[in-house]
Length: 140
Image (cartoon, rainbow, N blue to C red):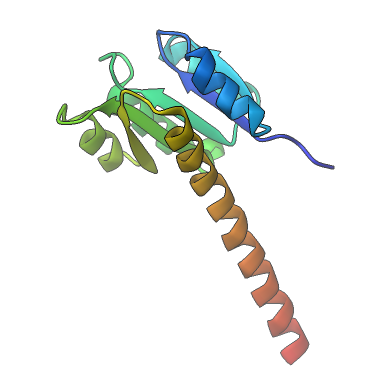
């Protein structure tokens, strides 16, 4: 059964209608969490495929990314961070396990492309692994 991929946006500011609309238009289910405690609880409650973390607020930073990465049940959740270029926050978040970074100000089409790259690249890897396993079974 098809399930639309779920994205959690962690930002004190509500995501712009343009960004949210662009993601929803591509079939994603988008939820917003206004702080990291709410976001973390949401991630534990129900599966999300990707979390977008706005690093503008010091409260969110690399520590949140590190906490997500340290939680075994969240190991397959992709983490995409948003930050101003030159702030140092993206490097810190990537060092804590973020999968990607997008510069601010956020461009909706560029963000959608980054989200699709992360999510669909993983599906391609999974399909390749499944095909590889099928082929090795027939070789035996």
